[in-house]
Amino acid sequence: MAEMEVRAFRDDDSTVPLQDWLDNLETVEPRAYEKCLALILELARRGSELRMPTSKKLRDDIFELRAKVGTVNYRILYFFTDKRGVACCSHGLTKEDVVPKGDIDLAVKRKALVKKNYNRHTADIDVED
Image (cartoon, rainbow, N blue to C red):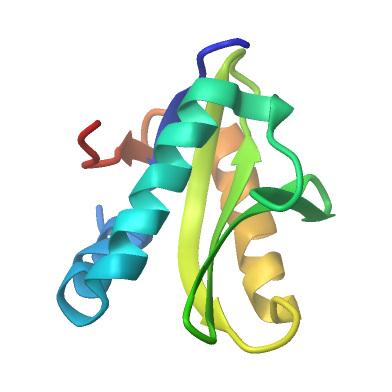
């Protein structure tokens, strides 16, 4: 099992959508927050070896980390960067059915930005093991 560095997407205005989503989740649904942190750490430990039910490929090399608390599905969309051994989390969302096309499209757009300028468009994720 190869260790993987996990980064978060950073916008042009330096906001980190995943971190904002996680910070809000910690307040409104602590159990889901803990599960999502555990998934990010599992991605760091197992990288591309993750499979269902933990991770699922969506399309255009965008993947989802999958958590559920009660009847609510939590997803973190991520992709692998051009840098060897680095995954980047685009953003998090809740869903009822399938991941909305717009969320996948957003992750694809963010992947292109990271490919164009890795240092500008990635940030550390604040998770503790």
